[in-house]
Image 1 (tube, rainbow, N blue to C red):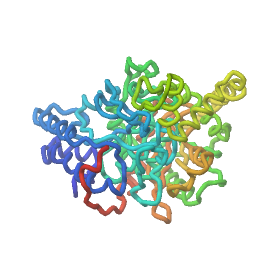
Image 2 (cartoon, protein in one colour; image 1 turned 90 degrees about the vertical axis):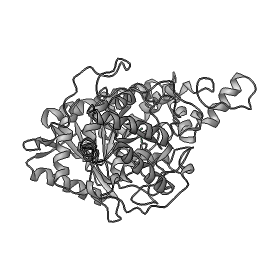
Image 3 (cartoon, rainbow, N blue to C red; image 1 turned 90 degrees about the horizontal axis):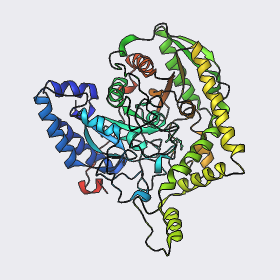
Image 4 (tube, protein in one colour; image 1 turned 30 degrees about the vertical axis):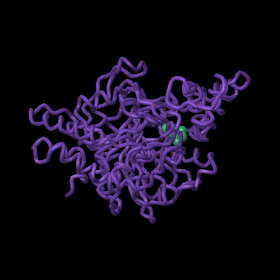
Length: 498
Ligand code: GLN
């Protein structure tokens, strides 16, 4: 088996036993990236020298027997997470030339555990989108089918994991951006509880919804990545001071006796691809066969989730993105006379059309005359959505749903109609509105050969239980072992970084 096919857990074993070196492993990924990137386009930037330096240090650490959770493990990081001294673009022209002067807390934690950074992954501009087509910098293709989107906004991270261009990745999830691309690319993606992982150094999109989380080939790999990044951070006042359980240690507990809820509102026929419904029902049966008890539940305010989300997310985005004014960060329009014109031109030319649309809508819903009608109303309905979950978790331990109504759609299919794009988030955004954790994992393929995922939602800080159920399902299935049929081509190594 080639080194790039390993899981993180397997690679860790081999590194520990000194069967392979971190440098060897890192080189295998750098070579694969060079050969595959012309067809996939997962990475905005690759850092071969830094990666090999980190790998050498990892080998020294392994030789001393002082390894951490991720020593020598090559990962990709979504380009919305700050790394000191390296370009952080958020796939926007607005951040051209910007290099953060500090590390995000998740990066400090990965460093402590000895990870190797391969590069920064492509995404929708400022994490706004569901297909990665809003990247101002490049296109990412779905490794399973070049004409399909990888999902978004963490499409680069998901495609990199699926194409084995890294062992695992970090993404961010504001309304589904880890879980949905994971589902479309046939990998595992976990959005932790709001406050479980520090957001310090994550470029803010909608601060009350954003969370960083892992993407990986298997559930155990995601458990390990979460173990490394979770925990209280004094630098993020919304991070919660609460012990981090042993996620890996609890994986084998199985699902016997677990009560699983199937929300009626998530199994609607309208707009749902029958192949998705079939695959998700198959997953439910498989869990029942292992002793889980399934029952129908209701989350009655689900029909309002898309509207509520897009009001709240846009309102918060319009405020967060006010800081890009041509003075503090990256891009400034050179051809302007006077401060007002500089602001105007910088913001009109630096942001792409979707970001501008959201800033305008966000400003509108917060404006004096409309605040009560939109933002306040949306916040009230958000509370009702939170209550739906609280009531449901009185009755059940976990909730099972589809991740998206269809498998990955074709590139260009929804770009002309933003509303159609927003509607694809219907099954993922409620978890962000409520702040609860959710995981997406592969449970089938469409007749066209595209992966299908299902979602497991849990109560606050119940990541361990979600991982336990997901792991049980994975053990009985083989979807996570299937790899996209990729032919590698050679390219000029210079082409992989901008
Ligand atoms: N697709 C959603 C949006 O466009 C979610 C994005 C995200 O989770 N970052 O806002």
